[in-house]
Length: 194
Image (cartoon, rainbow, N blue to C red; front, side):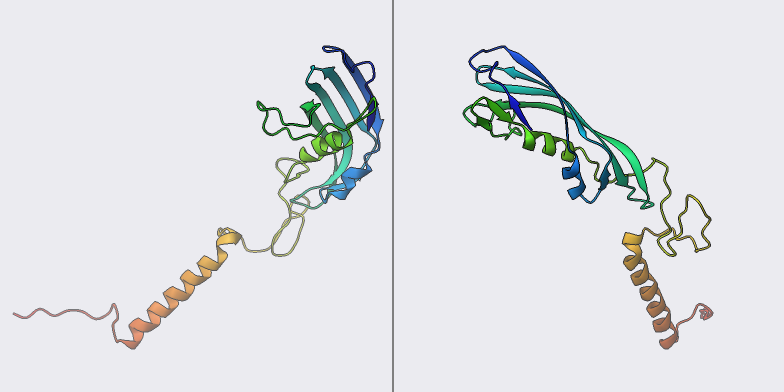
């Protein structure tokens, strides 16, 4: 997304409002986004700070995401707040060490493509869920727990700890076999010598 900023150059304190719609196809390269359901709405303010440009505003995209629990698609709005300082000399603002945007200035045009795309994609949740109380699918039979009951036995063991539960069962059975081999049982009683 290229923006003409000729009116801002050499004029510290001047600002420019940018309202645009750009194609949202780039978001579909990420596995969480199944489909962009429209353009990306960009509402930004660009201010000449004298040392660079302060870019603030928001970016919105309606998209179809896949729920990480039940694997069904659902519609969601992705929103990114932008507050970045682009420095003319390409250096990083010392107060904002996370700001590593290089200023792409071509004549009187500022290229904000990378800033817009990365700001939006960073705000895609790592775990997308269609609703907070989505029960997901049964890990054993794959039944959708939101629409049907599952007959699989309930396990109280976290699936990540299942190998430790198996190790515990193996250890207990081996211990019982050793007791039988050594002739020690609980039925044996001690007789006192009087």
